Length: 175
Image 1 (cartoon, rainbow, N blue to C red):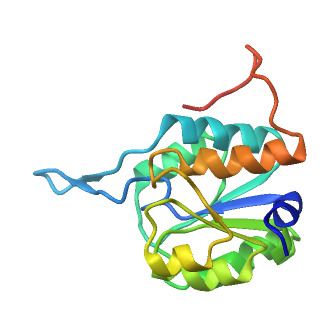
Image 2: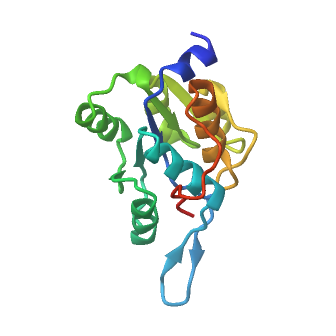
Image 3: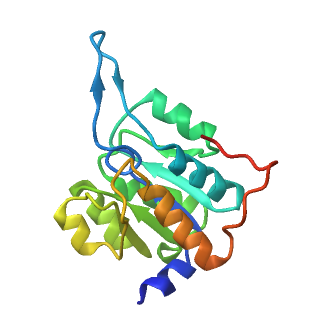
C-alpha cells in the first residue's frame, strides 16, 4: 500500500516517548530526579490533533509523572507507561477506541517499537531512529526525536486529510 493511502486512513496517532517526543536524553539531578525535554511545536500539533477529533495515545517503557502531567495538559488521556510488551497496550488501545490496525499511526525509534510498527497501518520514525526501525518505517521524518518529528507526522496526515487549518486566536494550543 502506498504511503498516501496509508495516511488517508489514519484516525489515531500513537507515540513512544523517549527518542520520539524527547531527544533520548535523561537529565539526572543530584537528588535522583530525572527530567526530559519536550518540543513545544510537537505539543502544539498534539493539541491540535486532539482538538480536531483524532485519538492520541502514548505507549512508553518509561515512567515519569512529569511526562504524564505534560501529556494530560495537551488533552492526551491514553497513556500507557512502564510498558515492556507494547503490542498488548496497543491491542487495549485499539479495543477501547474500536479501531482497526489500518487506522493507527505509530511512531517509534528503537527495537522495542518494532512489533507494534509491523502491526499498524502507518509506521513512522524520527530521523535518528535505530537502523532496524528506519528499515521498516513507511514514513521517516526529516526531524529527530524531540526536535519536531511528532509535529511532522501529525501535520502531514492532517494536511492530507484536510483537517490542518489556519490558526485562530481562540484556539487552544497546549505548549
